[in-house]
Structures are given as structure tokens and as C-alpha cells.
Length: 92
Image (cartoon, rainbow, N blue to C red; front, side, top):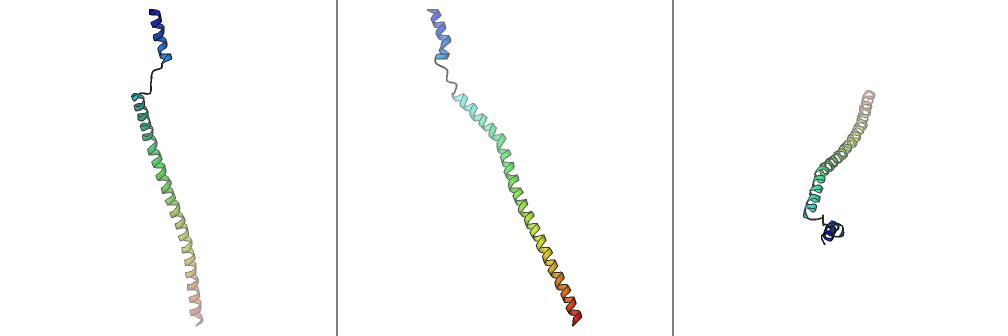
């Protein structure tokens, strides 16, 4: 009879496995997820900030280039007007 109990005790874990998904396992999963989020969230936040700043810089660069071109055109028009006035003043 004792042999039967020994065999039953040894095979008990195979026949009815223990439930390893208890409260402790759930707590470990939440702690793991929390740690992963603590590592990943700052990286995502910084990448997002870099993306928006680079978009802002790109917009400012385009506006700067457009204003420089507009300034060049206006200077050319002013020089043309000055030259025209000097020529007209000498004729009259």
C-alpha cells in the first residue's frame, strides 16, 4: 500500500499540474510590463520631440529661403528703379 502512495505522489504533479498562474505570477507580469514601459516610454517621447522639432526647423528653413529669394528680387527691383531715376534725371 505504501508503494502505491509513493507512486501516486510522484505522478500527482503529472496528473494534476499545479496552477502557476496565481497572484504572484500576475504581479510579476505587471512588474515586468511596468519596467519595460519605463525603459521604452522615454525613448518614444524623445523621438517624438525630435520629430516635431525637426519639422519646425524644416519649416523655418523653407521660410528663410523664400524670404531670402524675395529679398533678392526686391533689391533687384530697387536697383532697377534707382538706375532708371538716375538716367531720367540726367535726361531732363
